[in-house]
Amino acid sequence: WPMLAVLPTVEMAKRSSRGRIDPLIADSAALKERVQPARSRDAGNSMLSKEFPGGILVLTGANSATGLRSMPARYIFLDEVDAYPASSDEEGDPVTLAEARSTKAKGHLHDIWQAETKAEAEAAFDFFIETYGVKYDKAVAKLVKDREVLLSFYDFPAEHWKHIRTSNPIESSFATVRHRTGKTKGCLSRKTGLAMAFRLMMSAQVKWRKLDGANRLPEVVQGIAFKDGIKQLQAAA
Image (tube, rainbow, N blue to C red; front, side):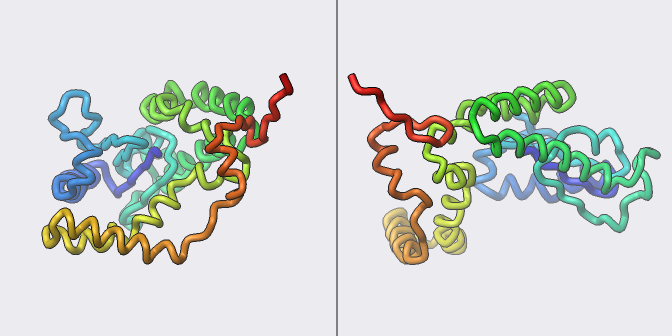
């Protein structure tokens, strides 16, 4: 998802990128896999822009109205708000300008994934592209590239939609493993690391609950067709 980080000034945003974000990426193997070095051709990694699979982080200053209007943002991070200027390039309160990037675009994004049918979602998707495609080309390009996958949940039972549309089950399931393997980095062999991860998952599963519509899983496995979340009955031959 597109993310916007706002610091008091553009210069502070650059310093934060050099002194905090770049070292964080360099020290994290997981981040280095996702964010290409700035020196790589077409890496999408510049001083104020960090692209990665599934999203982009843009840094700007509260003193730049142009930067605050640069893209629609799913998430906004406001840092050192007390040091923000009263007005950004005489266009108004920088916090209000930044939040406007989220509220309007967020509502249009919700129109896509909250649509009752795939046809309605496709129409909302087209509207989003038409509305934001020129001004926010990078963010829209990310969505367009993954369009088919993003809307594939309509081909599954409606009971499963909320599980498919979120990464929480994956993140929550592996959180306990990630936290412990991170702390023991370098202390375990591959074999003992796998054994520890297995035992942690076995322990964590005690707290798991069944997916909504678990009775639909055999139908999905059998390849039974669903359209807009509704099971399609095959006509008799």
